[in-house]
Length: 136
Image 1 (cartoon, rainbow, N blue to C red):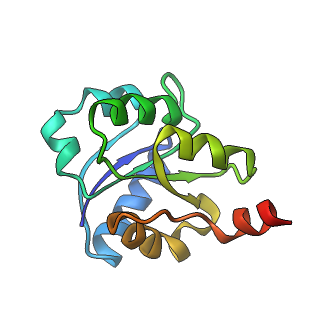
Image 2 (tube, rainbow, N blue to C red):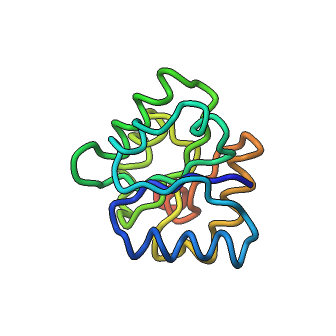
């Protein structure tokens, strides 16, 4: 799977890249530190990604706004949110913005592979803790 990582935490981005490439055998075709840097990538490169992994809270242009902008131009982009924020209020915002799934950073190494497969297949992947809270 070809993946782009968008996250302002350099250490997390590096660790995630290693995990994706060395443990899950995927290819990271780009990794950038901001929503602006992501939008500045070549459109062909963005469209070539099977899944884009993006943080919500970033300096400068946040992940929600970057997702809104890119999905306005490229409707079929598949973006997976990876965040530390576990509040369910984010769920509606990220789905409305165009995200296709949500994985918490605290659980990323346990749930990311399943989330990537679901999102690549065109299905939503929502963390089960959000769904339980939403129903309760």
